[in-house]
Image: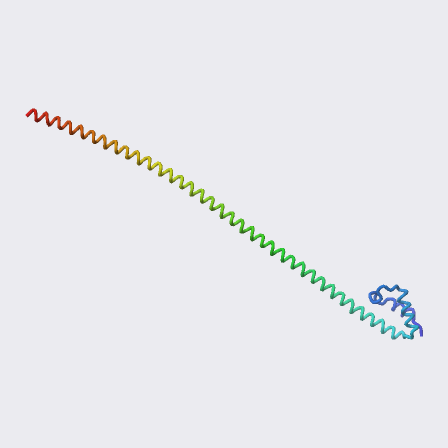
Amino acid sequence: RTFTEAQLNEAKAAPKFFTAGKQDSSIINDAADKHAQGITPAALAGLIAKRKAAAAKLAAMQAAREEAERQQALAIALLEAAKAAAEAAEQAEKERRVAAAAAEAEAAKVEAERLAAAAATEMERLRILEEAEAQARAREAEIAAHEEAVRARLVEAMSIEARTWIEAL
């Protein structure tokens, strides 16, 4: 019994990865060799079915491997994105702390300038008060000296008048 044209075409259409690297003529020659070895078309059909099953299993394994690789690449990308986000958040927190410290330093500087201005104003006010106090003491001393001089003249005038009265008596 010989192979029909359809059976040879079916053998030729076997999955490429199972017959990887073989030319179409090689597949046909393999089928012819199997025929020469006494393999019946039914046995060849069984072999072809096994090849197709193995090819389907290999394709499924290849697809699973590709999916696993894709999932791994996705996981790596997500991990790197999370790492970059964490670094960005850390950098933002550092920048926020620096900005907060700068704002506090600026506020402290403004407060120090305000206190220095208030202290300078208070010192000026105290200096003016001390000058006014010194002027008031000088004026009091002047008034006291003038009162003393007036008293002395009054005492002298009274003593002159008293002498005049005494002499007149």
